[in-house]
Every structure is written in structure tokens, then in C-alpha cells.
Length: 344
Ligand SMILES: Cc1ncc(C[n+]2csc(CCOP(=O)(O)OP(=O)(O)O)c2C)c(N)n1
Image 1 (cartoon, rainbow, N blue to C red):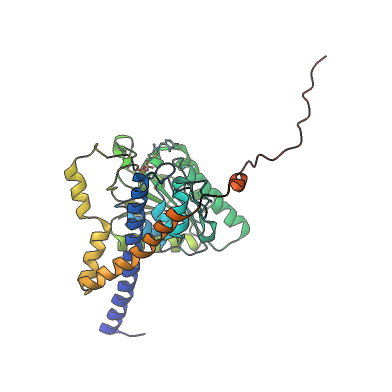
Image 2: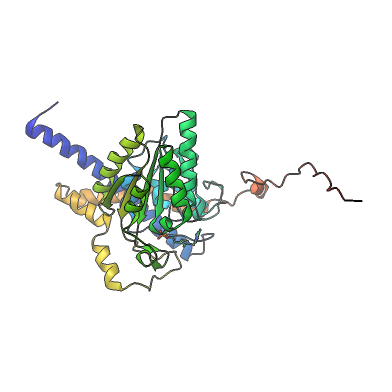
């Protein structure tokens, strides 16, 4: 191994490659959500879109550190997490538009994207419900003796629901392989979460249940990935569950239909300046990349997303005959129930 300045250079190069990959992934997520919002405005989207614009460093910093075999559980605001775990942007965009070729053949929509091929077990429209599923998936991993971990991402509003207590408690008692990630954008839908949350915050609550972890600036993609690497290594080597609290800010409305008038424009502007993509762009420039090279990275990240959007728009509707496939209750005939006994 090299030593001295050469070793330092190797380390810097390695970090630069990582940062470029993170930057591309964040730009791709931003492009996906901007196009998803356009599609919603065009009337092409079935159901609601919950954009995560401004929160991309959490998705990328966490999910790029996971392995393909690891499981991911996400929220109603899950496009970024799912893309960063490796899901196909066309299948996701087609899902939003209810088209054939969507991740669930158009039946699920934005809040129910799942892609088992990349370990993505599901977004979830029920706040905090993914925490219980994560504990269950991790228990299955334990029982089957598999070499993978579960990553469960939820919002700061979710820590005020019962499944947070139940899921973390279960995972701690059984020392299950789960990385819990609280993606704290400061709001629970349109309400400031601090107005609804008792005590000193998510990490303290996790620690009270015996789940240790770290708090990071969730707009700093390098900090998020470093913390994830450290925590997931502990989870992977049998240390039990860990908790990451990532503080970020949602620049867009709660949904595509929310103009977010409940917060001052100056507050949004301030957060826009510390947007994770802008910060990563500055880091790349600081590392010596010239503007043209950075622009080329951005173009390369956006192009496949733009193609996915066009392809989804042009995709056919699902075959009506498939309406009852892949759903829990197929509507198939069942054996008749025994008639209730009627007393004479
Ligand atoms: C069990 C449940 N209660 C209420 C809602 C309505 N709802 C949708 S999003 C949301 C806010 C959740 O806040 P948070 O977990 O912080 O996620 P964010 O929307 O801020 O990303 C609420 C209350 C829901 N989907 N599920």
C-alpha cells in the first residue's frame, strides 16, 4: 500500500469517485421528482406524489451504502430511497402513471412502489407501518440465517406512532439486523413536528429503547454515507439494531398539490442555499472538477430519467385481464363456508 502523500492522493481519489457517484444519484432523484411533478400537473399521475426535493442526500448517503441483497423499507415519500437502492426509473415512472411495465404493473402508484429484485420491500402510505414490517423482515433473516440487513427509513412524524415503540423494542430485544433511519425534514405533513413531539428527539427515544446510533447533517451526503457505513457495519456483524437521525429539509410541498404556504419564503430560501446537490456541486468544484465536467455529470444523470419519463408516457395501459393478478385477494371462488347452525 502507498504511504505519505501518495496514500493521501489515493484516498482523495477514492472519495472523489464516491462523491461523483453520490452527486449523479442525487441529480437523478431530483430529475425524477421534477418530472413526476410535471406529470402530475399534466394529469398523468394516478394518486398523490410526495416529493423529497431537498432531501436527496439522505436517500443517497444511506442507500448507496447498502448491498443489493439488503432489504429496504420506505415511506410515502420514497422515490429517492427506491431509486438509490437501484430500482428501474422507467418501471417507477410507469407505476406513477398506472401504466403497463410499472413496478406493480400500475396498481400501486407512488406510495406503494416495491421492487423485490433490488431488495425494496415497499414504500408505505401508512405512517410508521414500515417499522413493524422491518422488524419482521429482520426476524425472518435471523431465522433463515441469511447474510443481509434491513434498512428502514421513516419520517420524524413516524416516531410519534405506536409502531416506532413496538418495532424498535422488538429489534432491540432480539438484536435484529436493522438500521433504522429517521429522515427528519422538520414537518409531519404540514405541521412542524416539534409542535407534536415530546422529549429530546428521535435519537434519545431510540437510545431509551437500547438502540444506539448517530445524528448527522442530512444535507451533507458525505456525512450521511460515513455514518451509514459505520452503523451498518455494526448491524452486519451482529451488533443488533442501530439508529441514524438525519436532519434535512423538504423544499417542495408535502404533496404535488401543496403550495406549502405555511412556512415563510425566507426560511425556504435559506434551506435552498444549503440544498444537498448545491453543496455536493461545491465540493466537486473544490476538488478540482471544472464546471464543464460537473455539467457533464449532471447531464449524464438526467438523461436516463428523461428517457424513462418519455417511455412511461408512451407506455400502454395494463391489460384489463391482469386486474386481479398480484393482489392479495384475487376474487377467486372459495369453498363455501359451512352454513351456520340455526338453533331449532
Ligand atoms: C397512520 C397514518 N396517519 C396519518 C396519515 C396521514 N399522513 C400522511 S403523511 C403524514 C405526515 C408524516 O410525517 P413524517 O413521518 O414526518 O413524514 P413526512 O411527510 O414529513 O415526510 C401524515 C400524518 C397516514 N398516512 N398514516
